[in-house]
Image 1 (cartoon, rainbow, N blue to C red):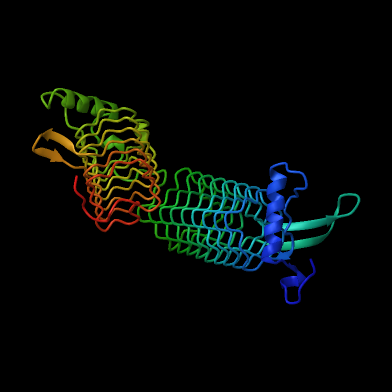
Image 2 (cartoon, rainbow, N blue to C red):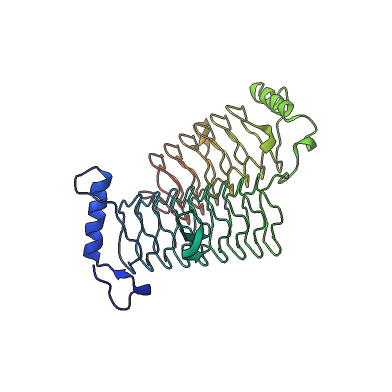
Length: 423
């Protein structure tokens, strides 16, 4: 295909038809069809072109200009995007697992909910070597990855290599950045609200003026990290985020035993557990724990295993249950108003009403709860109060929502009206 005048850097300008043909041949190549060929868009001009939903795993986009291109929903796993220009590109929901994005330009790109697990976003350069293996010249040196103003909301950047990345003013709201290498990265004024940076290496990184509201930095390396002017309200690190367990007045195991006695004896023995405001992360596990009626308002349960726990009538208003494993838990009649449940696993959990007598029923309250990215598949939510709850990206496949009150809720699932229904 002939080069066209005006193409950036003299790159070949490809037509949409030529792109479609290349994508087809790549599909044949990946499926072992005779005549198939791996897609190579290296050093081509693909400005504004559409690749929506295409499977381009292992394709070569080295140095390509994809300015404003539509790659929404594409599969670009292990693709080579070295030094590519993706400014303003649409990569919403794209899969870029282990993709090579070294030296890429991502300013203004939209990578909302994209999967960049183990992707390489470090500095990039291609060197020419002589016959003895010595570097004699830099053939292509695009420099550090630049993603100023990019949208990374809800993106998965776990284990991604981002050392030296220029990511100031970038939006990482709700991003999963577990184990991410951010050594010497520039994240000044970035929005990291609710981001999970557990185990990330931020050595020498700049977080000046960044929004770290409710971000998780447990196990993160912060050697010489500049956090001056950053908003760290609600940030969760390795230090207790609330009252430490040694202020309970007894070992937590004893408090749980006493509560179990209180439940099984109908209050005649033992003692009601009140964990309000405590950081319970050091408990380790609450698997199938007997926590009926427990009081734990604003307590921190982050990441705890609470599968199958019996928590009917529990008072959990404002509690931090992010990443908690609550699969199959019995939460009938519980108060979770304002609770943080982002990424919590609530599959098959029971959040229906607690029935005392025929005329005494206590619906569960999730009013104003933050359920973004939570998994509620198969959960029972009959008559639950979800007024003002944040349900964006929440999984509700197969959930029972009869009689739920979704007034003013965000991200209401299909088939569930934003108002109280009969039940």
